[in-house]
Amino acid sequence: MSLAIKDDEIDIVIGALCSDLTSFMNEWKSIFSRFHLIIVKDPDLKEELKIPDGFNLDVYQKPDIDRVVGSSTSVLFSGYSCGYFGYLVSRKKYIVSVDDDCLPARDNKGFLVDAISQHISNLANPATPFFFNTLYDPFSEGVDFVRGYPFSLRSGVKCALSCGLWLNLADHDAPTQALKPGQRNSRYVDAVMTVPARVLLPISGINIAFDREVVGPALVPALRLAGEGKFRWETMGDIWSGMCVKVVCDHLGLGVKSGLPYVWRNDRGDAIASLKKEWEGVKLMEEIVPFFQSVRLPLEATTAEDCIVEVANAVKEQLGSTDPLFDRAAKAMVDWVKLWKSVGSSSSSPGE
Image (cartoon, rainbow, N blue to C red):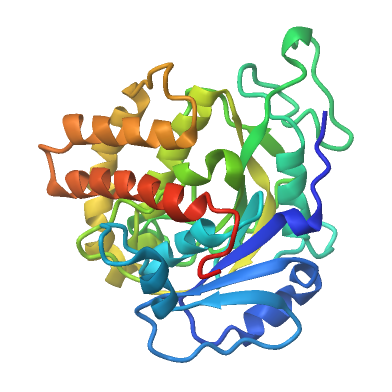
């Protein structure tokens, strides 16, 4: 049974790492104009934001972050993590988040892709994590369950997270992009699939949507590399957050989808220059993935907040001794849950 999701139940969150958003906003205007937007300026960005008129939006800057969060937390909202502040202060049920270096894509027929509508369709329709449908998402138009799919599983489960993809500059790591500097993604695959239960995936924060009320606290800004930069391939925070939210979804019996919608991602940064910054994260993944593959949560953990605290405890116990970075991540996860309970769960906007 699909849900009816209204426009006023959705916030679009944009982390502004670029000061001039004029071109970005104008390219998205036909799609964004019917929604409320939250723009969070990277606290490290010195220039004033340039935002064109014609949008229903709220802008948050460093003074707002300091006022709402205070100084008694280990959670940092600089760089790409500034978007998580938007997740925190939103009061809508659903969040769609798109990076500020992305533009609307075009499909195989040349039509402009409404990424917001596709994300909402993914979230409105059930996911099928317990048995794989070989025709991908059986709830997509023109698709159904294949022969042999158990009828007892065809109602599916709630989809809590929709992970979109990218044309042009795909979300490779710095070593891959440096090795293949001219490689660009031109394949538009018209498909959505549910990621099977107990299967991890690298969730990119570039183009995602989620049910904030159900899994918002599980999208957590916790893991920060020592030399973290301002390009996606210099960070691992969204990958760590994605591991957390997938484990939480598996535990709570929720679904995660990957595929449509696509965005067009502009070329940005120098992969070779970024190698030194991200290499730490590339190595850490060899420890991070086995950890998340093995972690199991107690039955008593029935909310996303409960689950993240349990994962944080496991991180501290199992990974804390291997690298101080993991200890810091565990503390940030616990502090994030406290923030969510004090700020994110309020019915009123911060400052009211």
